[in-house]
Length: 79
Image 1 (tube, one colour):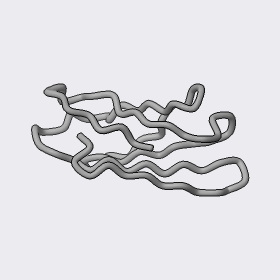
Image 2 (cartoon, rainbow, N blue to C red):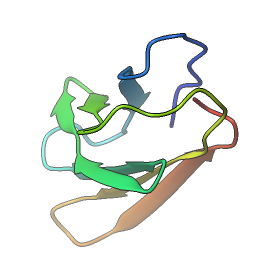
Image 3 (cartoon, rainbow, N blue to C red):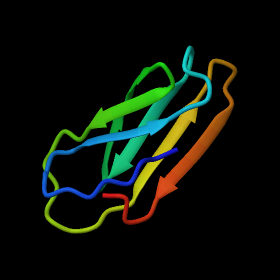
């Protein structure tokens, strides 16, 4: 999942959840910036490398487990 965020912080921490926390990698994209998230106990967190301008952005997350299975989640106007 991808959590929606309402904030005035231009460098917010993006968060969400994954089912398989032990061997999943998560790539997160917002405002054209893609980062690898940290996964801990089923919760992923990511920080964008550059500040975003004020506005609404879609947050996309792609999770890949050790078996190569891919899952996606998105939050339109999530940020």
